[in-house]
Image (cartoon, rainbow, N blue to C red; front, side, top):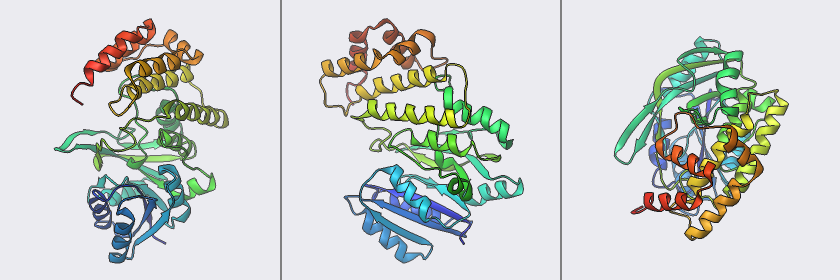
Amino acid sequence: MSTISVIVPVYKAEAFLRKCTDSILCQSHRDLELLLIDDGSPDKSGALCDAIAGEDGRVRVFHKPNGGVSSARNLGLREARGEYIAFVDSDDWLEPEALELLLTALVENGADSAGCGHFNVGDGGVTSSEAPALPAGVHEAADIRENLVLRLLGDRLRQPVLNGFIWRFLYTRSIIAENRIEFEGAYLEDELFLMEYFCHAQRLATVDTPLYNYYWNTASATHRYMRDYPETFRRFMERKKDLARRYGLDVPLWRENSNYAGLLIAVGNEYAPGNPASLAQKQRRIQEIAAQPEMQRALSVLRPEGAGRNKQIAAALLRRRWYGLLTLLYQIKNRGQ
C-alpha cells in the first residue's frame, strides 16, 4: 500500500500537467501513487497522462466522460490505495519536500490530518504567500470545529476570509471512506468537503511553511463567468444547511453571512468580462438575485467587515438598490479587460 495517494483531476491541462506531475513524482517522499483522472479532456491531456504513466510505475490513469472536477476527485477517492490522501490541481505544483513535511507533522504529532501554507503564483512568479488555515501547531477536535468548521459555515464576510482550499491538507483516507464523504458541484465544493471532513478529524497538525504553489490561472473554472451560478449557489446552500443540521453546527446569522457573500460573488460573476449578456440583462439579473428574500435579509442585518474598497462600494449600492450606478462602475472597472 502506498502511504500517500495524490489525486489530480485533469481537464484541458496539457500546457501545465508536466510541471504538476514532475513536482509530485520528484517528491523527497517516494512512497506514493499518483492518480491522474482524465475528465474527458478535449485536448491532448489524456494522451499526456498515459505517457507519464508509462514513465513511472507509481502513476495510474483513469479516463472518464466529462463530469466536472467533483466527479473526477470522487473517482480518485474510490480508486486510491494509500493510507493518506492529497489533492493537487493540474495547473499547480508542490514544493520538493511538501509531502514529507506534511506526513512528518501528522505522524510525529499523532494527528489524522496535516496542513500547510501556500504560495500564490502569477505569470510573473510568486505574488504572495498565505499562512495555513490554522496557526502552526497541533489543533484538537474542539479547536478544529471552532476555528475551521464554524468559520467555513458562517464567517464569510470578515477579512481575511478563510478560503476552502482542499489542496493545502493531507487527509486520512479511512475517515473519508468510513463517513462516505464526497464532492459535489463545480464551485464551492471545497468548502463543503472540508467542513464535513473536519467534523470527523480529531487532530490537525499545521506547519507555517508554504508547500503548495497555487497558479492564478484565469482560464480555470474559479475565474471565468459561470452562467448557472445562481442555481449552483442555491444547491450549495442546500447542502450547507444539511451539513449544519447533521453535525449540529450553528453560529449566529450564518445563513445571512453565507448569502451575503454569495450575493457579492454573484455581482462579480454577472459583470465578469466573459459574460456575453448586455449591460441591461446583467443589471436585471443582479436585481432579481438581490430581490430574493434571503438576500434582502442579509443586506439588512449585516455589513462586510474589513472588505476591500470595491466590495464595500458594491455592498453599499446593493443596500440602496442603486443598480444602475453599480452597473456603471463595473463597466468602468472592466474597460480594457
